[in-house]
Length: 95
Image (tube, rainbow, N blue to C red; front, side, top):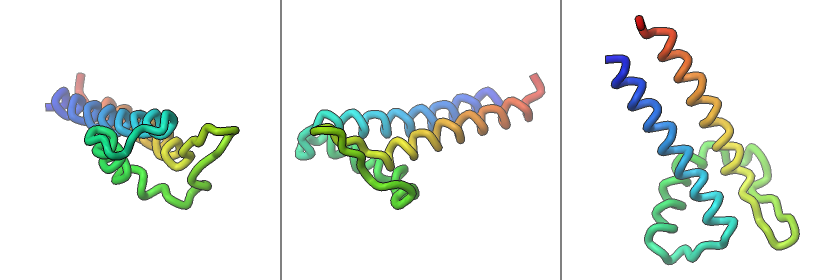
């Protein structure tokens, strides 16, 4: 039972983190938002980034490169949360 729970938790964490990383990459390369895949990634990742709006300024511009700081803060939070959840699940397993 715990192995299934581990796998589901890892899958969810990797899925969310992957979406946010894809969002960061797509915004860095200024992807065409009319593309179906790019718009899907931006829409799905905005669900996970929305709670972090207003924590920091939304973007950082260095020359012509624009970096989404909100997405980076969300990614950092989800990485830490996944690690903590992983350790909690390991502590409750009997193996």
